[in-house]
Length: 143
Image (tube, rainbow, N blue to C red; front, top):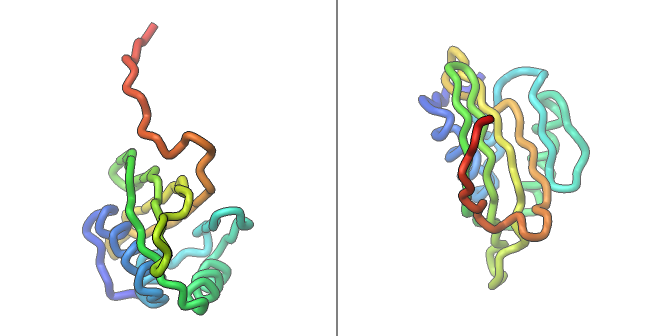
């Protein structure tokens, strides 16, 4: 069990991206809930369910030793007392490359536990053409 406490879902998400940039498996797994119902989908990858498949996927990713930098944009947050959903665009740059990769549309879901906020779902997909642009503000009309 992790002794790391994340007082807010945003703190957990910040630690998630820090772990990605540092290739830090212990920090990455401290972010995740210790639950067999966790789900992770990497861009263009299969759905991984459970602690061990999720841990093994991050272990393989970090073993490549590829250094990544993340910029999170266009965050949309849905909050409840026990659950928080973040929909973001990840702008990923590989250290040593000049241009960022195409954006990744990501949904991160966090659960409030006795040990603070923990990630229970990470679903990342390549952005569709034009999906990287900010949404156009249109009036919302209720009928």
